[in-house]
Length: 303
Image (cartoon, rainbow, N blue to C red; front, side, top):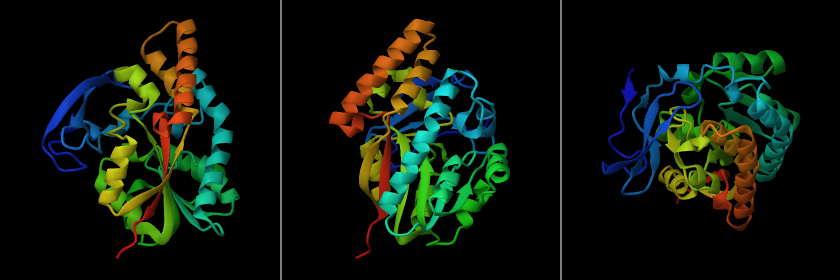
């Protein structure tokens, strides 16, 4: 296997890195991958991960939710049960922060196209980017959407979109800095980017440690906290306008984490529910305790 070995921090460039722990890929391969921190800035990332041309097999499962319409299994059923509500909430949030009349929206990593279709129904002119061919074709054939492959992303002209959304996508992108820079470039001067990311400093992440399902190695390469993403965005002349919690994520992630712990059925559902509730209550006091966070981002004005 051709592995990417990171020797300098992608955020600050420091070579002073340390392994925090190994995390097992429970979803696909059963392999272990080291999760490392930068001693200088604290940025956390997966190391020795498969290169972009080889990582596809780690996604190649009908159970990979963003690429599938399957509702088999409790986790999938829970995801689909909440999807309609979350799609409406996401579209409402984007409309509120975008302001004015709906404009042009790009959804990077659009999966099977459900959010794009919801945004289209809200009046946005939509385009999607999706690497997975099966998911991309589903979005095109079911909804008639304009969805291109991932190679098209870096060909998009500057200033093309009023809104760029990345719903749990940035953590997957091997070329992290280049991707963030491109998001900035393709936004209009007053455009917004909306980024949803797992939060490794949330309550459930700290509870489950190496079993936390949102580490999701090696598919998740970068593990963000609110502080880390603020620094990364600032590096690319972007600023966070607001941070919103994703309270339902804690229940879904806790359920998967219990599955990975191989808890018995009663313990699995009971403890996942309690951790989800505890995480939700903590996030009411401090949004940075949420399992996942949504960042509303704008360009910094050039002086």
